[in-house]
Image (cartoon, rainbow, N blue to C red):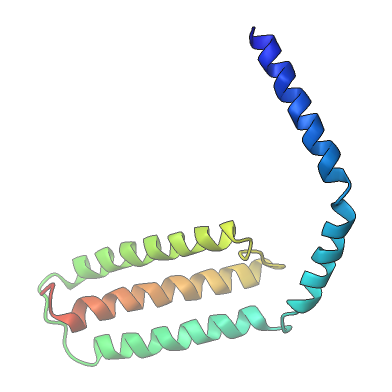
Length: 135
């Protein structure tokens, strides 16, 4: 009985492969047109990383321009860092699922990942200290 089910599944998959093989040339044409439309500039990753670093620097300036009002500032920094790393990990996973998390060199990967992590840590710190809800 189980072998009949597997044979039926194999026949269905063979049938699907038969129908999908005829339209593969049109898929290749659409793929080539899609890649031609989405032409990125040469330094796109570096520009995005620089924007994230600049925004993070501005947010950290707003956090540190006044004395910190908490007693346990080290604990607050550790918690904010963990939250920022978790948020950036979720963003990296979403970019991976959408097939946008691909880099040609290790330097670009580290630059982009580091700038995103720094941005989210500074964002969480800014929300934590400037909102006044958690103090």
